[in-house]
Length: 127
Image 1 (cartoon, rainbow, N blue to C red):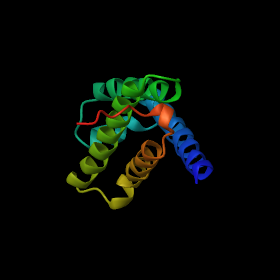
Image 2 (image 1 turned 180 degrees about the horizontal axis):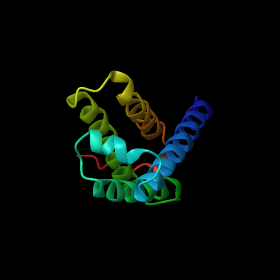
Image 3 (image 1 turned 90 degrees about the vertical axis):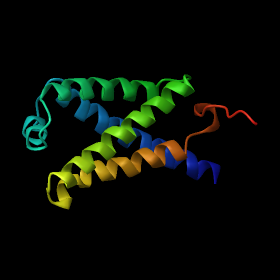
């Protein structure tokens, strides 16, 4: 079971990191078709650079050893960005298929966080 959890963790984390880094770089430099998507969702283009930069920093936080609280913030940021993207597509009346990439990455984010090894989790205080 422990080996299975580690495989699920690393597979989901590597997939998530690759997707977020690729998207983050494209968004930071406003390349790769994101301008049209953001414009269709009625967001200002400068949001791309802000969100893209934070995605790249979140990937670094997930992959470097230590800093478990920073990892929690990265997971939270990914959750908010991805759920917000999916909701934005729905609210703007776009087809479900346009929100599917965000929803898939949202599931991968949850898997990665859930299957983290103990040394990558924050310690919980007992009350």
